[in-house]
Length: 176
Image 1 (spheres, rainbow, N blue to C red):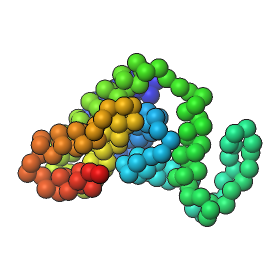
Image 2 (cartoon, rainbow, N blue to C red; image 1 turned 180 degrees about the horizontal axis):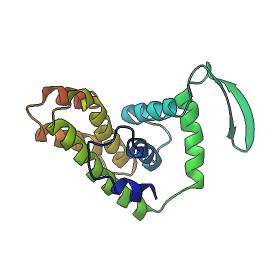
Image 3 (cartoon, rainbow, N blue to C red; image 1 turned 120 degrees about the vertical axis):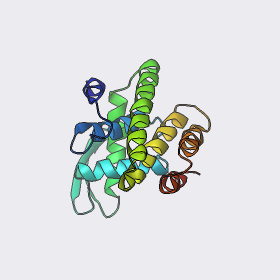
Image 4 (cartoon, rainbow, N blue to C red; image 1 turned 60 degrees about the horizontal axis):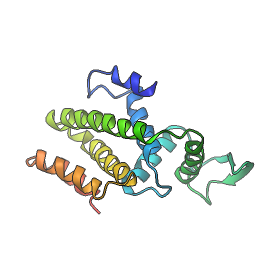
């Protein structure tokens, strides 16, 4: 349902205030198969956890391994708690390898259009956001078994935009 709704969005620049911005982040996290997030995945998890209210000023009650307990957020950051819960949720909503592959290809086209729209339109204040999406996509592909995927994705955009130094700088933050 999420993919169908997002596909109805015609403009790659029209993400502000719409679900597609949140849906792409959640789908990237959902497709990430490792339990340990890398740099871009962690940033996406932080964004999502902050949007839904997992912050450091609250006590959170959550379920883990069939038991409910309370934790003080000072001992564990909100995004770590979010990621633990999200991983438990993913176990109950597994998808097939074919579906995963289909979603990754779809995400790649959506992110590619978004990057072309932002960088081509010189919306410099959004360069960091789209560089994060590119790096997160690469990390997802690596978690699915594609070697050097993040480097391949980042290098593709570095080659495509040789004259956009600010965007190139944002991409280079994610090179390991």
